[in-house]
Image 1 (cartoon, rainbow, N blue to C red):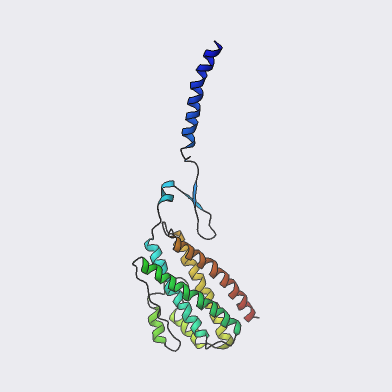
Image 2 (cartoon, rainbow, N blue to C red; image 1 turned 60 degrees about the vertical axis):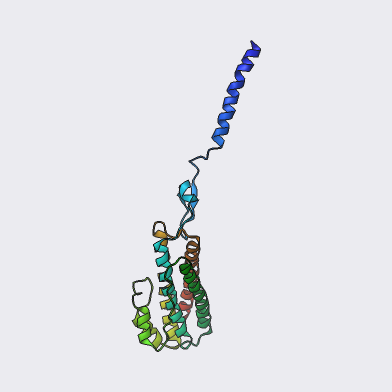
Length: 225
């Protein structure tokens, strides 16, 4: 009797072990897969099937890159004006940092668009003393957040010295805040910014321009004393 009970238990144990093995080889559907969120936003859960699909760029990504090229180009217009209108070394250093970073980013955005068969806007910098060129360059871009109007650009071009410095800082803060809005709108668009290059670039724009807004706000307060 003792032997028969032992034999009867063995198949039951085998079934339990086999059942346990089958359970461990099947991924639990309750384990979440997290996708990084926008800067300052938490990660969001996605399905396993969505996580395994290679992200493709969207029209929103293309529009963001094209628009940001024009947005950056106006910042270069502003720093070009500064070269002949300020007497401040601190302002020149600020403008140089903006110019170098945004010129490099324009090249990156153009290459990204070209690699995907999309139109890559050329940068035709509007120089000081050429109001018609300014107006042409700004045409169609006034709806973009933070962009200066032709009238604001003319006001900036007409200023010199400390008056110019103050206007430059006020307008560039406005300009940078517009870029933050563009990033926010991109991340709020379903399916956008899944391309790793777009996500990384937009995140960098958000971080860098927030930092520059902080520096310019401090500089503006010093001028207003």
